[in-house]
Image (cartoon, rainbow, N blue to C red; front, side, top):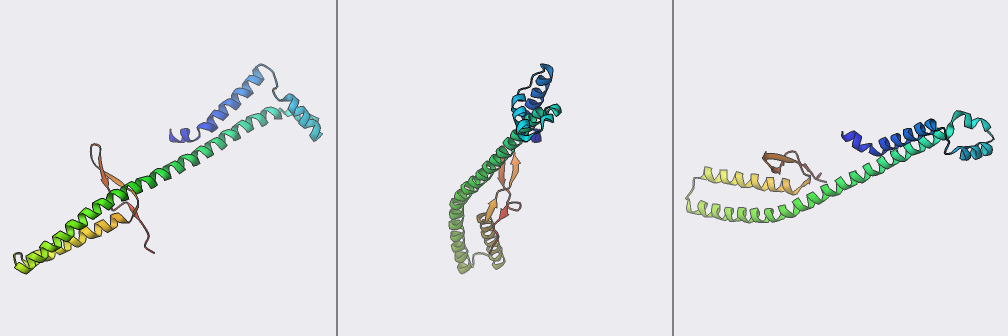
Length: 174
């Protein structure tokens, strides 16, 4: 069905052209006969009318207009999709900037508490190492989110989706 929608103008043009050809045959009238006679005179080919070139030309012109219409509208739709994708990324980056700030503040506070726990020897050093690794993993995930250029989502449940970090494409580091 998507291909039919993409070629809607061409299909309409084909139907109009076929309708024109059928009605000119059914009612035995030639809409462009005078035009073809003038063209034949100019081209010095009086036998042009015997091949019914006027109907073929007219149907071909209608089909070309339909094809042109489809191409223009497909380019327009592609441009709209690109603009929507750019706006989605802008909105995601704006939101993530706020989230990034909040999480970074939390991680900084967590580092302060880790330092206090290390100084007071309240926690086992292996547990502190685990905490350090988790802080690094979280910071790396935030950095990955900051570099996303194309958003990929994953469905979590009914009507709920989440950012799929592994399938989203990132900026190429130069």
